[in-house]
Length: 191
Length: 430
Image 1 (cartoon, chains in turn blue, purple):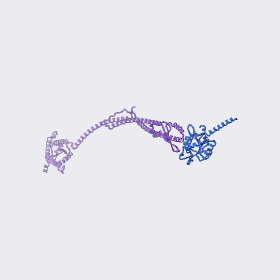
Image 2 (image 1 turned 30 degrees about the vertical axis):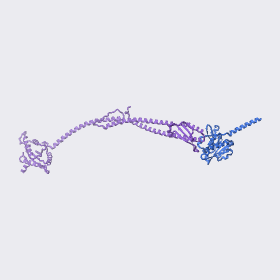
Image 3 (image 1 turned 135 degrees about the vertical axis):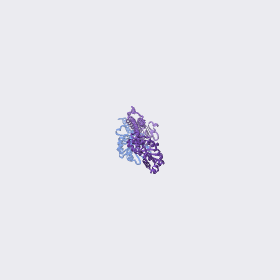
Image 4 (image 1 turned 180 degrees about the vertical axis):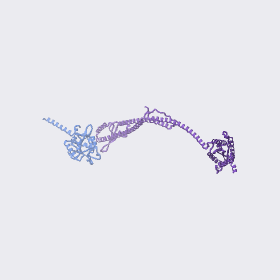
């Protein structure tokens, strides 16, 4: 192989890698994050997770280093929406890399930015173990067993994976169920 | 068909139908009111239910910031509820964030107040209890109006039918009652004597006509019977009158017979005694004189023996007639006292006047020639008189005066007959 050929192969490989990375670590829409910021504390209060809340709503935001800015942005939006907390509860936000998942064991909610499949499975296992509500930015993760995401169609509505929610032993307010779209395995390619 | 020929039974049935229709109409009206109320309640419930169902979802969508979801949801709601005319959501700042349809006109404000087709509710965040806005919903009331109209029309139809039938029934019964009243008035004022029943038979086949004609027939019969009865009464009255007259005459005769001597046709002794007792009492009261003359036909037995009893009776009759003719006053009474003996009662007459009367009788007797047709000769008939007279006192008895006259008569017989003896002459002799 010539020098030029080697260079082309490298460029092609780099391009493929960059495509993978962009696919894996996608950029996050600020408006969608804004909706999540509004929803997250409410999901806790509208679910059986409320029973776990003592004085403050504890939510854990898990992300890869690549998504740190988006995670910080989300937390900023949450604080902006609920500066004094909600319904007499203060909001405690824990931002961790996926590697520091253990720090979230007392949280009522895990918000998951995109990560590797391995991290996802670990996180979901962890959440199931500690009965923590899981919410992902990416609706594709519902297929992996995440509890809630957002359905971004003609309208934006909560997207619930009822089977995983039931598996985690979490219950939701009926009203929330009525405004949400229910995920099923058949719908994997619909969104 | 003439209304007068309809049977009372049919009229009664019409009455019952009218009454039933009226009751049915009333019941229908009450039922429709009930249905209307139920409709209103159910519509209110349905509206409230819809509002209470969608408001938490809308609230949640607002609180979650899912306005696009809200819009789609509300579009579904407006599609599913065809009677929804207006749906508005106004946020807490008063900004209209969703609008469907047009605002209701003021015409329906009353119904809005009744919450029939207008509902509104505040949208509250179920978590924070924060007011998120207000939802207003207006529903069409056309169904309600149609139902109300149908109810009204049906009820009015039933009532109008009932009313018309009722009027017919009243008209019929009024006519009947008027006729019956007139009939009863005529019957009550009817007097067979006046024959004042003026109704005639009718050409009606119903019960009223039958009763009317029966009454007219009965009155006609009563009239004819009354006429016969009147005639019978008149005849009977005439007969009674005749019989009464005959009876009166018979009584008179009987009375006459009872007080009259059958042979001489002058008063008998009993009548004399009654009469004399009366004038005796009267004389006592009026202090008047009463005189009694007793007389006897001289040699009467000899007349009988000579000429027979028939002549003797003839003599008695003629002497009595003469004596009666001689008496001029009504108050003087001559009676046959027994056999050939006569007695005369004289009221307010003294002994002198009585003596004069005796002399008059004697003179009258001399005019008689009672035996002129007899084969044998006989002395003329003469009478012997005994007179008594007194003003009766309280203790005096009438019989005493008669006894004195009798004694005087006896004395006249002793003195040779054909003479008049008064008590003064009798006392002198005694």
